[in-house]
Length: 143
Image (cartoon, rainbow, N blue to C red; front, side, top):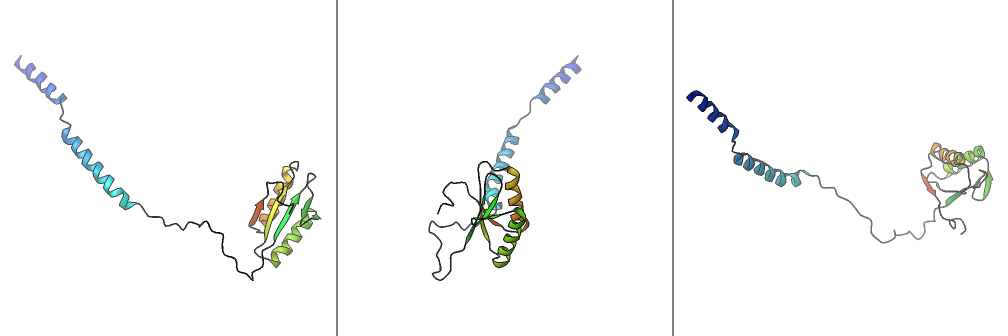
């Protein structure tokens, strides 16, 4: 019988673990992690824009922005001249060869077919015209 008592006693002592040293280790590791983490992060240097408008060179001409309008029927107008999609492509190609920094603003009627707009934007992308704006206001071309 004494053998059974010792085995019961031995099992009860195994169930009681002292976790205080384990908690001390966890807190030490946490402190080390908190201290070393900011040193491992890379600093990202950013140049933020100022609130001032960019300085203009007095003799520099203002760059022309070409206005491309799509009406409700899908007809394209470049600078108020009507063009078919193929003719528009050729005209934009001529303008691009004359000015590599070509700027185009596209405005479409509310009722224009979605495919017409995509075709025009696709043409601009194929010609590698990257400075493209989409006009959303009604008074953009009234000036």
